[in-house]
Length: 297
Image 1 (cartoon, one colour):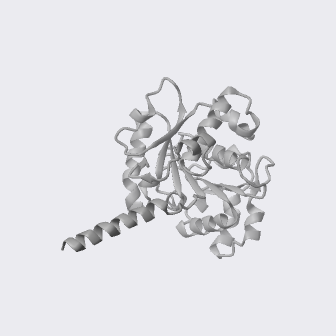
Image 2 (cartoon, rainbow, N blue to C red):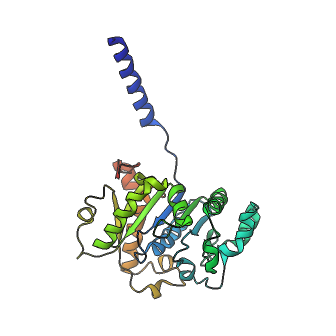
Image 3 (cartoon, rainbow, N blue to C red):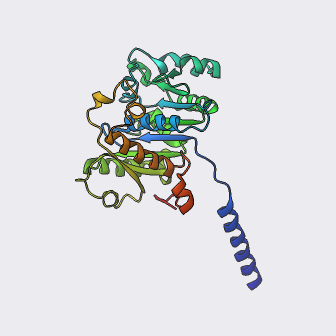
């Protein structure tokens, strides 16, 4: 009996060593999601895609920004693409399973004249809300992931839409964008309780407090009871009108506010492993590895 126990202990030790040294898969897809409308998830998704494009290692890399928010689609209008019905026009090809890379390329829009920074999304006709289902969104995401190095999804808000649920299920990581308020926190807590029933892994969620100021509570205090890690905070950028139609993150680097926003977002993307760690983190061994039970270990 003792020999069996010793054998089990030896096997457990070897399994632990194997898991500790196993190469981790580099994440490619990030879902940016807000538990309620108005917390700024669309702006964070757009900014994350721009920063990933700027920090790509090769000029040929493709960064794709997807809008899967069909309840309150805002990102398309923020990018100045009001007249384009991107998802509407692609539906016949997706339904017929004929969305080849060539066809996909015709519907992807290069934004801000940045070669390799592409956008797909936005439903114009309300009646198409019900016609897009989980199969369509899965098929489109698979097609995009096959041609892109990194994919950022604006996943929308309340998880009762096919696009939102698909994005949250399939993404490697989920950034939950909350305003530092009681209402946002309660909405997040409610949605998080629904995730297991929807097939969404709550352990891959990290919180980002958006529109955060020095007058707000400490982020760790605000997250108390949510059992989810706070990855960072993003400061207020001013009126939404000032962020529409131009690449403020890439073009307005000189302003103090944008510089701080860029640095904080870069740290958040490093925590998600969507960006490689900075030199100081490499030397200090501070790179987070996985979201496990709401924490990073």
